[in-house]
Image (tube, rainbow, N blue to C red; front, top):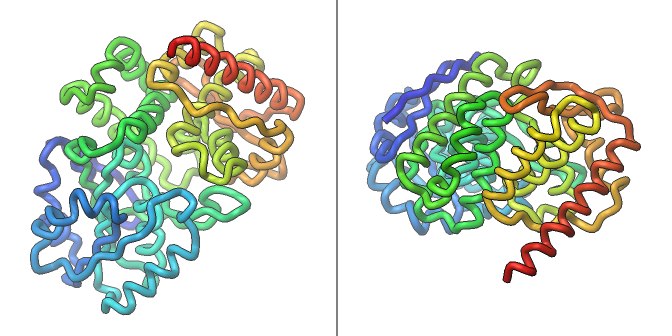
Length: 372
């Protein structure tokens, strides 16, 4: 078991990572210090796999379970309202504690509920996907989507603790598992060249879920996320580097109505587009762009790039939280292990990059078809 500390204005907390750390859940819940009833928030699919075990660990403290849809299309204010009303009916008060058991959608929604219900109650995250374990469960970002864009309503609200047990990943379907690998690749590009080289050399072992390789990349990613959010909790500076690929990704999710991509897959395309933009702006060498694209390709075939006009994708980007005074700002790589924040790009260069992504997608699909 590894303990990684995260600093937060409302109280520091620990991320426990390693196989078997779920056994620590009851201890963390008791140390949350509220002495109230515990309410689990999960999804039907996750609770079917893991609910009985979580209930046993929480024993008498567990009061009720609220199940929500964990599809990205259900990550909205309607889901928040329904869950909050369920909490009221189940008797939750200001001393209650939420234990969020699930992937990124469950964690984001449950975290926002915790930040809002009774003006703030405690939450512990038990992430069950790769994306959630290495990224979304850490750092206190919570929120839901609007039709106009992703994560536009939310709050910074740190948890009381995070329990990241790789055992949860054994039940993940292959596509969902691969989706999380793209977020791990992101960590290599933005600040950990050693992690990136490990992925270049041993990605097959990670994809086979070999214990040592998977533990290494998860712990390495968590440590980097914890370092960044400890230095910049509210995304006023350094934390922006975590958005590498996400301006493009959020737009892709939005224009396809959250029905075409898993989040990590959209990030995979977003990183390809961001690396291409960095080359176009003279910031990144073509060699490093090729290395980034190759690792992403080795993680698995991405869903195709949407046949949507570049202007519509650019319009969706304008709703991104990183836009300033109508100017799009990107996180772009300068080399493997280093990125620059706040890079602006004119519309003509963005149109060119988006059209090139369409060409890459068609080329990739053609090669995949020939390989069948």
